[in-house]
Amino acid sequence: MFDPHLSLPVDYLWQIDARLREFGIDPSVWFAAAGLDAAAQLALGCGVGPPGPAASADPQLRVPLAKFVRLVQAALQTSGEPALGLLVGERLLAHTHGVLGGALLQARSLREALALLERFMALRMPLITLSLQHHGDELRVCFVEAWPLGELQRPLLESTLLSVRNLLDALTLGASRAGSVAFAFEAPEYARLARELLRSPVRYGQQWTGFSLPIHVLDAPLKQADPAAFEEAARSCQRALDRLDADASLSVRVQRLLLQAPAGLPSLQASARRLRLSPRTLHRRLVEQGTSFRQLLDEVRHSLALAQLRSGRSSIEAIAYRLGYTDSANFRRAFKRWQGVAPGQWRRVCAGVPAGTGVEAHRAALGDGDASKSVDLPIAPD
Image (tube, rainbow, N blue to C red; front, side, top):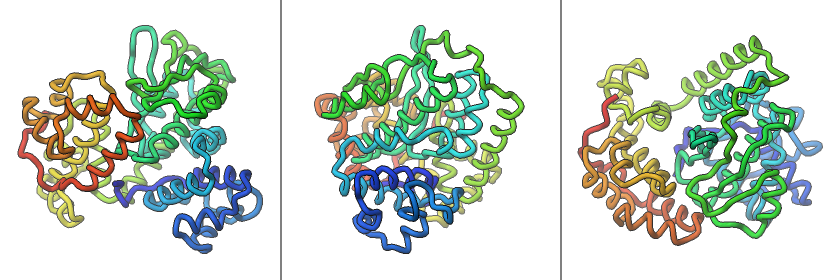
């Protein structure tokens, strides 16, 4: 389901480790449930000394995504705690977000901080993207799955959203005055705990996931602002992202470029130019990695189509246009190839069942689909 070249900071595993140990769960039991041995546990600094990062562990260490997913699944299984995502998110304070957390604390305004977070979200949580959307007199801070998260949708969205709320509280010294929180899935049995931890009204079964902020608070000056330190920290974030790009496979870099395109999905030629390669070289290197630009584009279109249909805010025609299809009929044919049903039917089914169930179905479909059989369609102009 996920690209094997992606990785996440080890800090987040340390916070899961700390929560599980508070529950009385030995880290060795957790790792064994994930199919990992004591050597892997020691290498990641879990279960060594008091809860939290081990003194011998490298804070710059990143965990391969496949291993991270197995450990999150095992944590949910061994703890039996459905609210684990929230309880881990409660521990994700500014210092757990590395250089990005430090940069955010120097911002001059919430607008500046949120723009930085939107830009560098991939440094900390590549599975979720941040989207800032203006709706009347409020700004919606939306959390969107970069790939269908399956059974991890709820805990990862809950922990990520709560960690960002924690950051805003740290920035504004508790005066962020955030509005209500929205989740696209149905209300869980721990909904009261969610309201308590998020310190806001929480609405479930919505068309989006995120929280709102009044427009008038976005440009209010922040007391802890340090413009020079902010600029230097932002440059550090860019250097860190550049290192990730250099270490990442070319296919991951292409996927990230496609997912973060501000307007329309770039063509092979435009993507190659942004990556400072010739189109022929880009094509050849992707083939060497067992994929192609067409296949990656197809996978990204699939993921974005699911997210946009699930949001319920756009027509089929609008989604088709944004994904680079010349007409909605081409999009409908592609979607039926991905999911086995027409997009309108999929949206109606999704609206009538809990979101978690729907996403698990999407995950299975995504795994069964043959992404290499891409429809020969034009790409939106760069």
